[in-house]
Image (cartoon, rainbow, N blue to C red; front, side, top):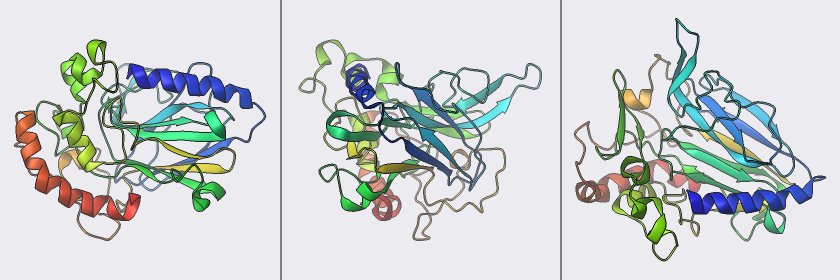
Length: 318
């Protein structure tokens, strides 16, 4: 994450020059059949948001105003509860370590699907992306709204992006995160799982030429072609809209019907069927018998990813 963090910090510094610019509104929507607790984190030097965390029941939405020049990220926390003895709040995925529903400056524990924004960045543009560089815990899509989203501003890059596919059941065994009662609840990145420089784009691999996609990052990229899959995945994964005229809707589990009753468990993890926009049952990648190596995972991708991508992404992101 180091190379991308530097770029975001530079963009945030440029954004501070636009203090009089219009703010943007993030409308955060829960399309999952279970409660999601969004977490929000402002970048260093960026003005704080009015909230850093809250609960969203299935089907609920909440608008959060972001000040002009804001830079930061938001994500979804799942399987959250307060400890009966201590009252400390914690989540199985995306936990921010604050011990409270509000994240209070804490970032997401890996693995977590991230939405990243820099408003009023270089060239008078908003920059945004959905990143799986730190792993994945639930589907998430960013949809620009407003005048620039309909006019195609931002050199053709003002468009929806994200990862609408369910990947937890598909996750290779050596990346998968299981919860005792809930099955697979998240999917780690190769950098997080193994710490190798080649997966983390560090040291001798700290440049776009040296750090190339791996079999693991290609697992994420094949299922979610518009999301970041590794640190230097900029060309196909960074999107821009005209600053000052665009708001953003961030949706967890896009296209999943809200009539699914919450059972206190993560339906993704429990293997309950989900629906795509066309009413077709969303495809899961097999059973809990997962490939034990990157090579085996890559072999199984050809059919599974093609089917899932066709069902889950075609009507949302293309």
